[in-house]
Length: 127
Figure (spheres, helix red, strand yellow):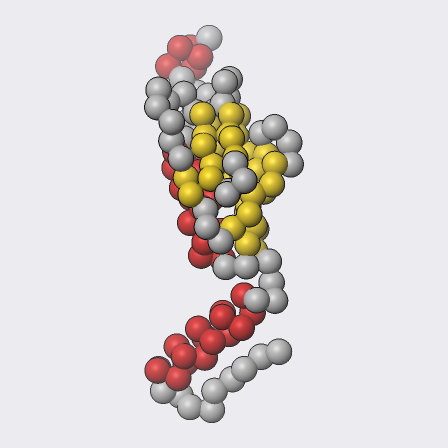
């Protein structure tokens, strides 16, 4: 189903764009897959979809997701899904920025299809 406005006015184009996003958000499910790698890295979830990542911090960090759902596919892969794409992206970015991947070791959180190239260190480049 596609809605097209007959007016070329900018207001109507923006209006119909937002209307299409709102209309199709109830018929689609948006998702993101996150992977994390590292020794001692864990993510805990409670019933209310509050995420508590354990990424080597000395204090408890909690991330609240109100209109999204989380599913653990494996011990290190999280599947985040919901009907609103902005909430899904916001939640996945919050988890990602708690521990982004390290360019030298490759440890940290990354998105599922994200390609990561490791940099050579000073010592390993001379060996």
